Length: 221
Image (cartoon, rainbow, N blue to C red; front, top):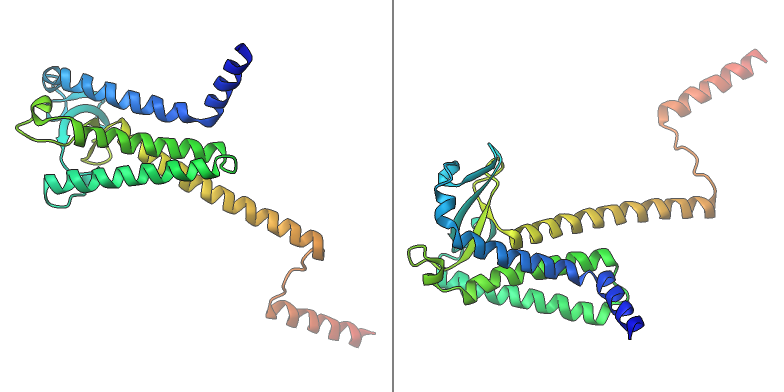
């Protein structure tokens, strides 16, 4: 029994599923706390009445975002709710199906990135589908609870779910670039090993200079 439990815990850890679960739980708890203590936040005296964490850069500022990340909108709160919820569900389902069939062939880092995206998509989808306007208490608005204010960088607010998706996208981009560089170096080494060192390609000027030197050398002889 203990061996099975150890194997199960080891598999759970190595699967990186726990990363997605922690992010999702953190997103839900943080949003509920922000909503609960929103009056205290607005009395913080910081930017837009929020709380400054790092003056001039980072703060806490509660709002309901009827759009999606970076202010992207379809023009209607209802359309945003339906379309982006369906999109989040489809993306999450597609990633899960892929992982089910390609689990053994997928690297741990890619699994971590995948579960970060799933956590972010589900976290914001929960807001859109299950949080009522009365619960959010923001003048009848219904959307996503945003509270992380990087006002030193841009005017958009974020939440844990948004950060998970953005960080996952950056990680994926970095991994792809690093893998491409590694593959290029490996291919170059393989080619050099098969064909021998590649001679430096001489420019026209170098060739002409060498020919002149050879002619002068012949004359001196």
